[in-house]
Figure 1: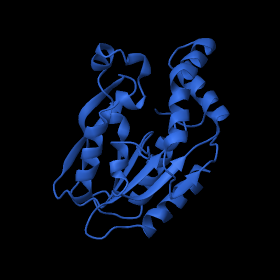
Figure 2: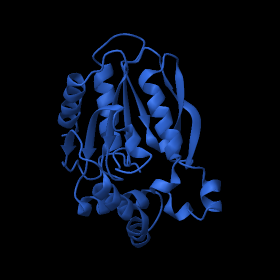
Figure 3: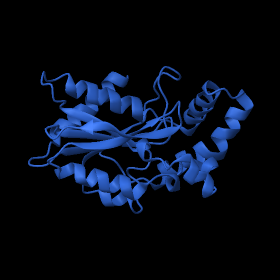
Figure 4: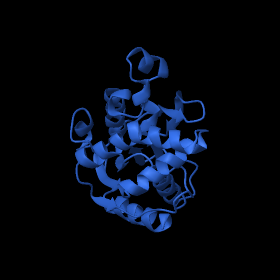
Length: 223
């Protein structure tokens, strides 16, 4: 199923290629929706279509723009990590806007889940890479600064299984991090699920909406 969805997204990108500027594609959805797995599959599929040493497409996840835990703790937001206010949203939006027309190589942060922090300059975007796939929860939020990217995206995709399925996935994710099932469910319900509901409620309609529920635990989950 993930292969079928990746093909649908690739076909959409092909129909929306921009001339003179980079093609910026947004893949959004609530936490644990499968958007990260889908975005990675799309980039791999696009790059498999050419033999150049320069990648045809590069993935830039929004998660790299998480505020540092020390900043969140000082602001009383550590328990809300993953909520919109726990990201450098303005910095992220400015970086994506620059990507559309940048002529030089640029570098972007990558979030390391095991270390629970962002690593600066870990993702390089080659100046000749013509497609950038952006992935994250809040890309289509109809509020500032997120909506300032509306005209930057050549194509938008929204991935959203049911809330019941998301609850199962979120609980499982916390179990994988060492929490017992009861504590894992509590963590999901107090932070992740409210974030998921907000994403579903407040996001603009995407060009392509994918509601499929991928194999329940056969995927990597992300914020």
